[in-house]
Image 1 (cartoon, rainbow over the protein chains, first blue to last red):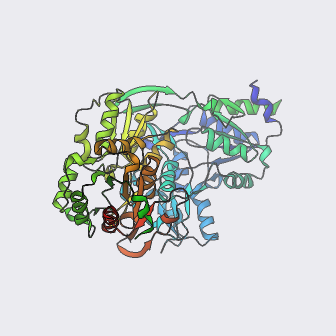
Image 2 (cartoon, chains in turn brown, purple):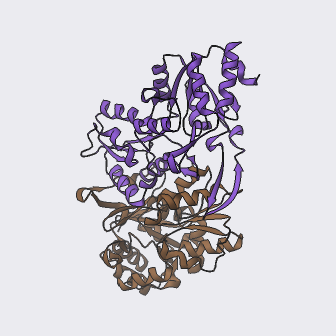
Length: 286
Length: 286
């Protein structure tokens, strides 16, 4: 039995990160399932454990994202997914905020019902190629021109892994705008406590009854733990990568740092989701 | 007499920032002289005071930059200008660093004599439209793949003013890369102490004998003061601006914050370079 299995007493719900845990995104077809993950999701669903998917994905609407995952073979539905864009829309409406959007084209439909005229805040998501100098500069001008600049960031990740290598994530551009305007962003999405709490509410379980499984030590593991949940880190996704430099495979690195992160320590480390689920289910049957 | 004129006793040299003090960059012809600045430079040159231009401009070689300023009417020569790219080249050679460059196309000739094969560091300058997602991501991959990641930034400015509005400066992208890779950049250019010291060495004056005139409270004023110089802030350049939002003139703001900066206080504030030079020369004649 894995040493961390002792933390599993009383667990009633599992929260899964998607990118880097279920699949690696990118390339033709939009990504590749991580071996064993499709079956692992099925096993959780038949076990009687509650299940919720909690993603910082903001390159598509939840509908399109879930369609892709279904195409890849996953048993997943839109109403099982907690994602930053719908969470941000609730906040915008509550606070009468009219956003200037710096986001991926494919996530714009999530903001269809939000008033965007005469903006009084900025929302930044994982805009990928939309992070041009022109677009970032336009966003900066809006933000620095506001009497009370509000910057809402859909996550604060540094980077993620696609099939062709690492990609800069929204957090990097959040930091860029924070520095440019000398302000602090409000983060919607992992690792924000409210975001995990909303996922738990949807599942109907208490924080101490839930376990998070993710590949990001800060956003998945640290965020869940701060909310009172247990958390496992998988050694897939951004945990290791190979990357291309000017068209040539240069080197393959395994990041040694995450298991020695200065501030965050996972309750357990597993090679992949399949291993995590096997240990969890075995423990529950004992 | 301006209250700050008391600080002028013993002054033998003047260091001038260029963009926002001599001229506003951008638009046809590359910019517009700030009224009175062409004459102010002439007056310093005939006064017997030493003069040095100290810029963080990295969108062109020193040669091209000086040609533009001469075309605009300024009495300025290449060997009177201290600029970050030549300073960085010296550091690269001293430390056997081979840079991956993320810079403006027009400054690349400054790095002609530097070995750039198989990079072991990154140099980032004010790349403007070259700050695409693709280019920043490629730079990130080089940097995070290095065993000992070295990031050299040609300045750390937040933004500057062009004739059509504010533009994001290199510091914003430096912060983005710092966050992505969890590292600290080394700054060449203002406000680095070594950069001001090199300008003073060229003039042959001691720090306490020199006065800096700039529009940036942190990079010009703060940097010069930390080096032991006096420093004036002009109310031109980025000090105030109007900006365009989606093609419509939206509002004009005067930034109230700089004269109440929490950490840096200039030795004096003047409306423009012409006023500064008149006070300095009057004081020296008394």
